Length: 246
Ligand SMILES: [Zn+2]
Image (cartoon, rainbow, N blue to C red; front, side, top):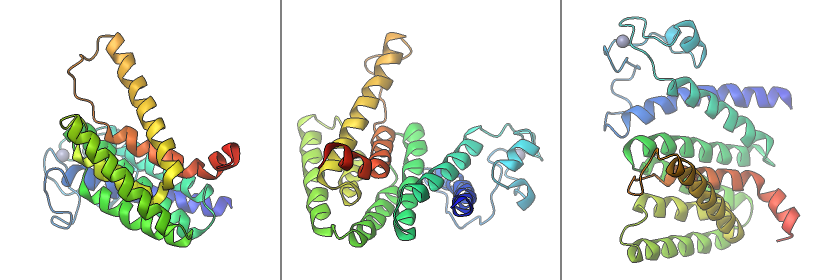
């Protein structure tokens, strides 16, 4: 068990390192394969493999580029650790290896959209497509494809309607994200995930609003709240079902 979880954590760290590349390149429309090696965003020097080991290199380099001394954002080791942790959780909360892999793909997509949405106010289609594909696989292995397909179409349509009525009050990216998540959530899970996302969103807005750190007109990305609401619900779904007897 511990052996399996340690491997999941280490693979998560490596995927986290790849996520850092995607978070930087996707919204800037830089190709993922060209340049194939990672480079310092400041001096463009190629990063050697020994300076590219997840978390460890950040510590050994004291958070600075070896060539130009540029301060590497703390986001890099955070993304790596977060991905390692989420992969570990995916493997501990799942019933089979395939299910664990679909959970990990979901976590990967959520971390990607979180950091892109926070900086650029957009949800990358890469996340949406990855959740769609892994969600369909998850539904297939759990024998809930039809129910989840109907959930997906329904939640997509409802949010699209809300978007129209609220004159684009929610982004189309959020609509697509929540729509495809139906394949993981099913009808009850969708309601729970939306409740978690809305409540955590409200709490995160009210506190800085009272501290006057943000104004009423400040735009806040909803994608991260939605994404984490979905991931938490998926992990806790068996527990929720047992508690409420759905
Ligand atoms: Zn540099």
